[in-house]
Length: 165
Image 1 (tube, rainbow, N blue to C red):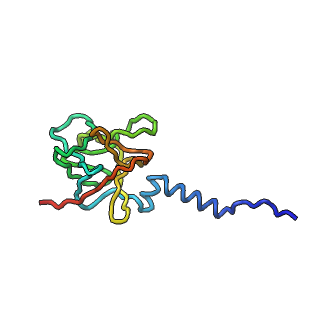
Image 2: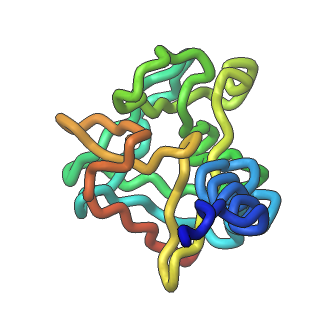
Image 3: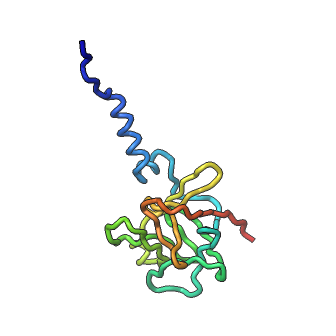
């Protein structure tokens, strides 16, 4: 006598659906407390051991962020999903191509153009933190900063808290 084919239980299906929502949605992560929109202390960001450098001049329009060992490291604050340094905002542009290629990360002047920037969040992972730019982590290519949407690059991104002097 053959047993009837088994079906997955509705509870199992619900559990899988909840896991998908939690693990793949930035908004869900933020609502459940997995992602934060602010950090209390100022910090620098290094990609592969090289810091994101601050701008040397005031800008009037968005400019792609860079990493360099020869510049001065930018000191950031994250408040209400705005990653800022010296009156500028670091973020992705709201209008991008729809490919899964890495997306440029720009400096925006803190003003009208700042409305064209996307929110930035941070996730705590053990003793370290991970910045999330619309779901993507940071990578550097040719000295320029990008958000990696696929998460395939294993470049080490480090947030280093600084003390004000």
